[in-house]
Image 1 (cartoon, helix red, strand yellow):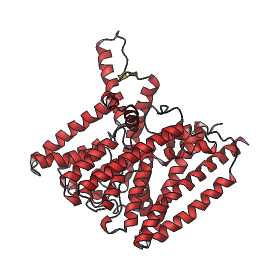
Image 2 (cartoon, rainbow, N blue to C red; image 1 turned 180 degrees about the vertical axis):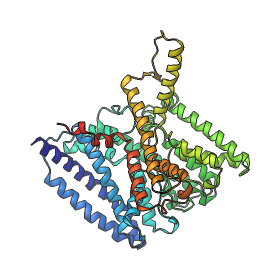
Image 3 (spheres, rainbow, N blue to C red; image 1 turned 120 degrees about the vertical axis):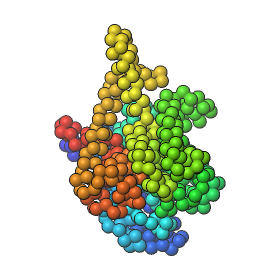
Image 4 (cartoon, one colour; image 1 turned 90 degrees about the vertical axis):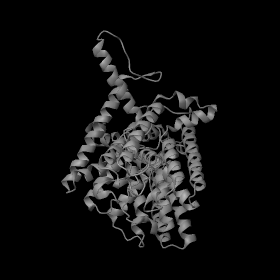
Length: 486
């Protein structure tokens, strides 16, 4: 009886979220209708399939006073991200004008919704406008997570959403929230997110982009998704102003969104100045930009001012796991590209739309390592690891070390598996780094796109993208025997 009840709770929530997500087919559907594109059928079919299916599942499993437990949150998050992927891929697979396989559609859909931005299309410039918009919309929705949007509605349905919120939000401090009510927190995050997206779109437009391109790039940049309307990405526009806008908003989008909320509510910039993680993140970005600028200039590729602009843009894009690029980044010196790919593991701040391990975890590990050196030098001293005014507890420290170990272990496993499928080590490293960090830019055989990979490699990298987006733990928890013990 208990298992049956919990099963109904999971189905009920998943069905509701499917209904919610299927509504996102309407904007690209309307655009396809206006432009008289054949893609209209694909979006309409996807909506017609999943919207009523979600309604039926939601209606058949309705019950009063639903309360989520911890295990329900993890199950729903993982199941719905799998459904996310399937629904996201469906319009691309059904669109005859694209003529792509299911593996390609799944890769593109998963890449979009996980904000990875890796693409199987060799020429995106000729895609229908509705598909170009849809890809950017996938980035935008996946950026903050439909789950965070859903918890603003769940209380109205009599459903406690905290377990969903804690499972979805990244970082070691999952219990923190901005306002006493979770729904208010979700609304505040989405308001900030939408405001930043609007500002980014306007900035791109003022920098010289056509409005449609500005809108799509605004959605992709704020979500740190990286899908572009041009095959050459940002390099197509050959504009320093556009590169600076893209780089600047990549950094802004990598900031913890709770800081924006607090700064807006207090009408003060002090939350930004006082945040240790943000200062650490910006220092790392500045160091990497300086190194890349010098190396690109030393290689004789550009004059010094141009080296700085291109380096600032590409470092900002890759360290935040955005994935927008200039057309010629693959022609940069190999050691520079490897450094950029390695920087993608760093990521941005916790509570942002970025992927990667994230700056706060690296800051905690740095402080812990420094603490160990001091403790060895002064064995009797009583010391504690702090981030700002917060003392890092043993539980958080164990969580960070465990996550770091599992992240590197999974990365090595994916690299080995891709290498086993016949791809060279550099291609394997770059492709896995692009996918598990949700960054999207490959190198070697995937420098021009991920289309040449075989189907097995594409499905493998889909797994890497989902694992990186969910930050490993929810998936591993579901695979553990202890989770399923009553």
